[in-house]
Image (cartoon, rainbow, N blue to C red; front, side, top):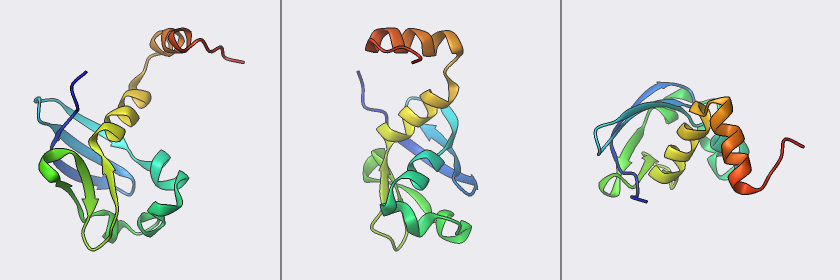
Length: 103
């Protein structure tokens, strides 16, 4: 599987970004699951001004925020996008591949 690479990012609102992928695709992604779950992202919480400083770094392998030692990988963004766009049938098939159930 090819590593996803970012071409550009546009902040939509707090936690939501529109990204363009190097392969030509685009996506709107809610980063809240990472930002609200991991303490390292605390500086981004509830501060749209800081969140708006998001930029693509290192040839597209991640997003980073200006003035902060924080980034999120393109791979993590792609995974978040995939989990947010999965249909019910895709989710069931994914659980089956992992050997998991709804319980």
